[in-house]
Image (cartoon, rainbow over all chains, first blue to last red; front, side, top):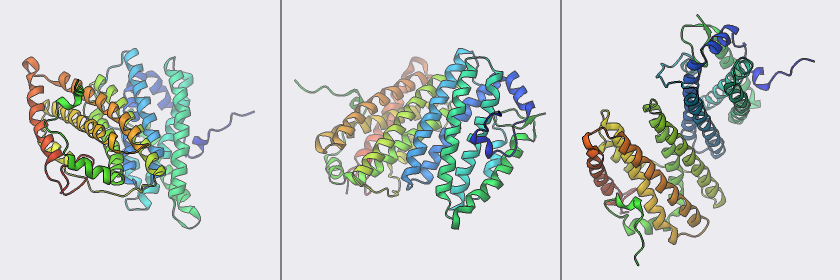
Amino acid sequence: MTEAVPPTQTVLLAPTPASWVDYAVAHWRLLLVDHANCEKKAASTALSLMFAYSEDRKLSGALSRLAREELRHFEQVQRIMQTLDVPDVRQKPGRYAAGLRAAMLKTEPARKLDVLLVGALIEARSAERFRLLVPRLPDPLAEFYAALERSEARHFELYLNLAREADESDGGGECARRLAVLAAREAELATAPDRVFRFHSGAPV
Amino acid sequence: MTEAVPPTQTVLLAPTPASWVDYAVAHWRLLLVDHANCEKKAASTALSLMFAYSEDRKLSGALSRLAREELRHFEQVQRIMQTLDVPDVRQKPGRYAAGLRAAMLKTEPARKLDVLLVGALIEARSAERFRLLVPRLPDPLAEFYAALERSEARHFELYLNLAREADESDGGGECARRLAVLAAREAELATAPDRVFRFHSGAPV
């Protein structure tokens, strides 16, 4: 019997390079610092969507709950950093979020669809990387990341469902078309050689 | 025996005008719409401070928990709006937040102190207004606002304590000096005649 492919993996067009996983395992302290920042950014992105689409009450409620969960994860990462004596250092952002943002359409209603699909892709990639890291890291990190993989997978489903509902095209085909375009860009950003190491960076050079 | 003055009231330099309370009771549906927005903005402000002062781990952790609580309140307001059939409408912001922002010092470390003091003042004013509204509104609003008054009072204490810790002046007198300046501006914004009705607006004209 082969292991079932998690739903999150079906949208990722390329797996994370083994070299990224090796680097992350060797530099887990650096990873934790960026991870804390990712949780904050995830909450901030959800909040900015709540402001941008405030008339969409269902979306606002769902993203408010999601933002609360990301903030709780942020607090958990902070506690683990404290326990493991990892200092906070300011890091410049990697290319991933800016690269995805550049690929998004800028005018409504296309923008709303794109921003939700990008949210789904980021959550899917996060879940994939947590899954790859769990067997390679010691506790308490392994245990924590296993729990986070399950959360990210739920967030992926949420963003994808919101995107499907935001698709106003005839027959709803626009969602799949844009997902293909954005997923191709995402896979490139997550795998191409990258001088900067971050949670969502490409193959370390 | 006279009723004890809540700690939040000691920093407010003028009480909310009776005319604002009358107007709010008569227009509670309009109030709810702005209230939902205030909870979102409160979470967003806390998050922006977490990014601005990310090296301050204690502040980040405290504000993350605060942001989660504001988001939970947002979800509660949304549910009450649903129950009471209050539609979401987009409202232009009132003068209060922009007026307070204009009174803040712009360079560090003065900015950090000011932004925390402004946070304390907004929470204090919110607690005061919830307290004034509770005896005038029917349930479920009265009950909800009574619970919120207690939360806002806790948030006031938190912001004030963070401000005291951020005071780098000799003897710590800068905190009290800036509080006096900012509280005077706050009292003016919350009481002077105001053409726009909002949760933090002045006397309705």
